[in-house]
Image (cartoon, rainbow, N blue to C red):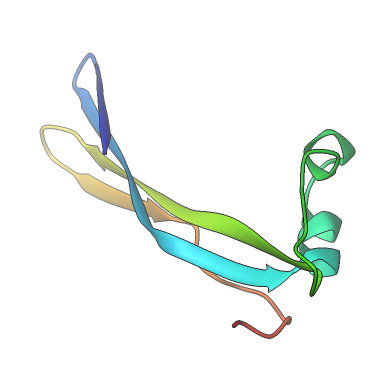
Length: 75
């Protein structure tokens, strides 16, 4: 978990786990510079982190989560 405070905003970045999914849909969602760094396993799956951001102000709390919207099978 990482925490950052900017003015009235308190942000906490945290991991909610890992997902293993097929490399082809993953590469379609990322810019080429990102895809060049992706290394698939022998079954053509990649491991990606599910990371979220919690933002708190004096009045509001907002959760920004990455979700797992994908049409590829999840292993």
